[in-house]
Structure formats: C-alpha cells, structure tokens
Length: 232
Image (cartoon, rainbow, N blue to C red; front, side):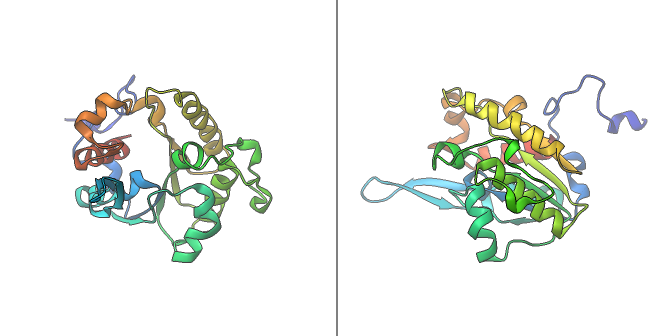
C-alpha cells in the first residue's frame, strides 16, 4: 500500500467515487451550514384538508447525517424557504447565527430565484472590500454573507454549493447561478465551489420516484445528498 490510495486519480472528477465514510470531510471539527429546505431536512405531508404541509426535520437533514458519519459538529442555521436576502437582512441576526466555525457551507439560490423572484444580479454586484455597497440582489447578498463570515474567521474554509439541475426550463437559470457562484468563489481566499449543477444527478421526476417525498427529498434523498456534499 502507498499514499496513492489517498490521492485523487489523474482524471478523477468530483463524485466519480462515493465513499460511505465521507473521506477527508472528517478533518474539520466544526462546520456551520447556511441553507434552505434542502439543508433543513424539510418533509412534505398533507393535513386533513389535503393541503401540503412543510416541516423542517433537522434530524434527517444532510448536515445531521454528516455529523453522525464523520463526528464533525455541524451547526445548522438553515430553514425552509430561506433566501440570501432574508439570511443577511434578518434571520442570522435575529437568531444569533453569526457564529464562529472552522468552515462554512452555503447552499442557497433555489428560493431566491424560483420562489421569491428576487433579482439574481451578477458578481458585479459584489464589492468584497466594501460589502455594504453590494446591490440587493442574490449575488450581492451572497457576497455580504461571505464577507461577514470572513470577519468572524478570516481563515475559515467556505464551500458554496450550486443547485442541482431539474431537467426543466429553469435549468438555464441554474447554470447561470452556478457560473456566477464560481466567479464569486474566486473573489475570496479559501472559498470553494461545490458544483452540483455540473456533477450531481439531475433532480428530476425520475430521481424523485426513489429519493423524493413530493418535491423535497425523503430520508434516503437527504442521506444521498450528504454523501455527495462530503465526497465532492
């Protein structure tokens, strides 16, 4: 046996190999997660009138799965329906979520564009030296979040997750979000892209037959997503 067993293969791409131990994801002691329903483990159910009810089930979320697998402490600051604007302008302050962590994972964007209709903007809306001047767009607020985390821990490793494709018309916007988030990561030290748009399975109706509970993932879906995040 030699050290090549632990190294990336010459042509290996993200998610080519999935290790159930999650590999080197366990090197971190404490990680903060900023996200929406995908990170909060949201379940869909129906009330007595047949209306859909959404419930955050954090114990089933992918951060909770990774905490159990790796032993790393995951502080989950997510909530169903979260947007970059709400997190930056009210949610984090109201709940005391600007906390120190060794690393952070930010997974936002679906609600911003496809639910709330917030303007996406571009990385041109981000002033990393003077974030208070950022435009009130998705990318402007994402830039503010990253800047704020850097004031808490300048050496924090920050991982920005892009949305999965859906096999729908919105995929064009998802690809745009991913391309701009890549540019955002390039603006900051120790900030890395987890490009689920390019490398994760398409989260379409076929995938949801096995891994979905309505539109949101079921427990198997959240477990699978945990493996993707950690193995990326």
